[in-house]
Amino acid sequence: MRSKSKIFDLSAISIIACDCLQAVICIFIDLFFISRILNNPDSTASENIINIGLFYLIYYFILATFYTFSGYILKKINKSIFVSIGAVVLTGVVFMVYLMSKYGILSDFVPLIAVFYGIGFGFYSSGYNNLTAETISSKHQVRFFAVKRIMFQMTYIIFPISLGYVVDMDFTVAALIMLAVCALLILFSCLIRPKKTYKLSFNLREFGKLMKENKKETKPLWLVYVTNFFRGASYDCFTTLITILVMKSFDSNASLGTFQSIFTACSLVTMFIYLRYYRKKRANGFIIPTIVAVTGTIIAILCATNKTTIIIFYAVYSILNVILMSISDSRRSGVVRVLSLHSHILESNAFAEFFLGAGRVLSSLFLLLSGVFDSLISDDSTLFLKIALGFVCFMYVMYGVSLIWLEKALIKQDEEFKKVHIAEEIIKTED
Image 1 (cartoon, one colour):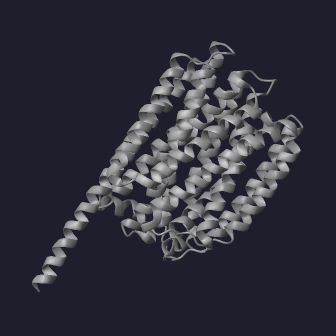
Image 2 (tube, rainbow, N blue to C red):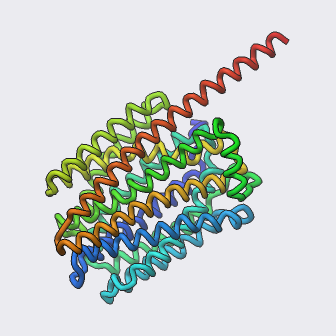
Image 3 (tube, rainbow, N blue to C red):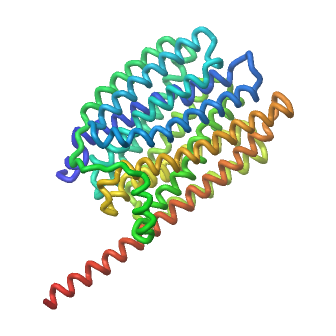
């Protein structure tokens, strides 16, 4: 019980609460805002997909760019302030979506909403990621992030189906709920107190030089950035493509929320198994089945796009993908500290966001182009949308492969550390 209290103190609980609350905002924006664009009767299906691609292209570009400037401020001020500012801006985005949807002008302001959404999450994520790195020790990374992912998944059980029905019945009530969520996000962000603060630097050029000069020692960190690129090029776009495919087939916010909730509930079993049996040396046993199963369902969709294949894909992806998310989340926050690069947390998070953002921008560009090229064929064409899905599937396979490389690099590093440690003990004994 003592070890649990050390991990899950008020700050750790507040970090998990912030993660769950921002997930509710993501559900509202990424699911129901997107569904409103897809259901726009004044535009063709291809034009709506172009709008979605444009939205994410702008959003991800701003989000990745934000880290270039935020690090200079974050090293001087309380990071929870950034989280609170982000929550306030996201509250404004929710209010904008409500007003523009109410007056039927949502599609006309997609770029503007994307800009503010990117700025809001830029503030939030830059503060949140660095707070997490300073608050949760590397010793407890795997356990903490597994529990955090379980709570995150529970959020995706409760809110998609409930918000889906509320949105279909009364969008005003849904917007009021979201404002309350934003207020709670601000409150919990103020309760996070890092266990240990470090004298942080922020010089991306010098950090890159340090990484280059110590390639062998920093290889695991390089692999963290590589996995982030492939994660950005697959995970986020998969979520968007799922939304598009479900809305095209079922045409209902309630259906979208119901599927999300049911399959996310099933994923909790996956997380408990992961938490119980995961070790670095067992990583392949978790990662490979996930890649194979998800890829198989994508191939099924490419061969025959119908309600059955979409539901199977949705189920497999939702239930198994949490494994890859948990591994990459814990490694992003933990590896920089394992390598004793505590003072470079800001630079490491900036590099991680650059790679993540590059992958996101690339996949969003593919989504945008799929809408453009499908519109040239016919209004109902999905040929290039399927090609984009195939590209994202390949990126997902590489995401899994890069995670395997990362786990192997960490195992090798552990073995080398043990050899050095044993050699030092022998010398001490001889002395």
